[in-house]
Length: 126
Image (tube, rainbow, N blue to C red; front, side, top):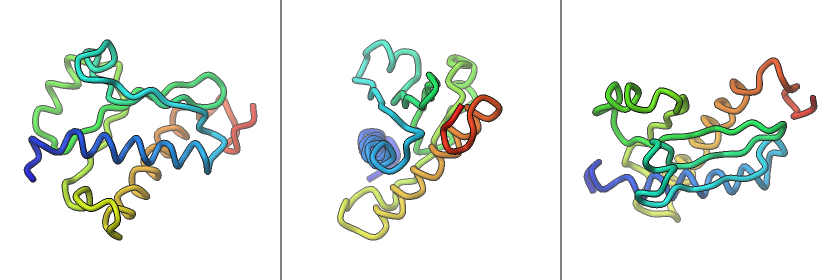
């Protein structure tokens, strides 16, 4: 599997990780996943994660740094870019896949904490 074909697998892993976050962490309350060529996709957003307090994390999922500078120039409002490398995405039952999901959850949690810093306490209370 090369990085050209990784997009759908990486986005699926991110969606799965977000679903887990919503169950495990009260900071996260919902999400919308972009469909191919819909409005979100055209705006450079692969998944929007809704955080308590009315915050939204527009996230772009990337498998390489290739063309990242061009992406940031075209979509400057998409501030959260999540890089996922190809190892770990081929077998959802593997330990490597589980580690990848845990990595995604840690990164998204950091994104959320950074986004709400100064507005909400870390436990999600205003």
